[in-house]
Length: 114
Length: 110
Image (cartoon, rainbow over all chains, first blue to last red; front, side, top):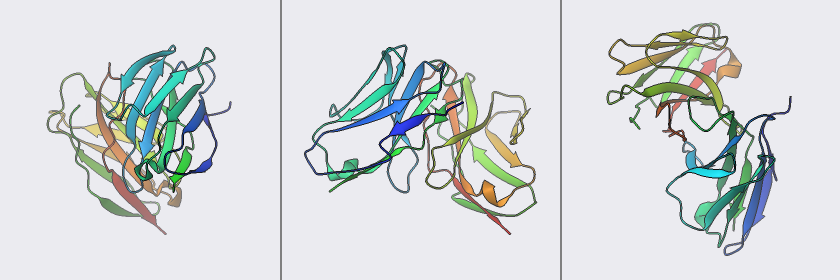
């Protein structure tokens, strides 16, 4: 079975631009979470979606938004990019919306903002 | 969510047991202890979780003290491929997020 897939793998953007990152969960998983990992730190929670509804939001500005589609795939959008948005963006899927179910992480999208 | 404290780094010889400690002195009764690891340039990988009983799976064992204020992840026979950052997380079962700290960098040496 395919694991969590993310696209693109790498991306370079300029300050002020907009970016869309994509995630496909494991088949049968209905929950998708997004995390930001800055170099040298642990992943930080951004959003969780379960059954296409937002279930949780981390401490990130409104420039960050996400959505989940009927097939449970998800997009993370970041507007007005800042240099500090450079990070590895991780997507995780799980069977349901609570953390008692283990989360399976994708390989991430490496975003560089110049 | 309870804060967890882990050593910054640890070394282990290949083939020996790796014992990774974690303190979670403020853990509440409905918070599980989760362990994830992250091999360089990959996404985190789930290892094991538990509430108050010791747990074992094909990857590792989790020992939780009776007062639940600390736990130890045990990799019984560490290999070079176990070199990674190991994260200990305390999280409510009804929670929707994982709160990662900085973890422990485990280096397995030949």
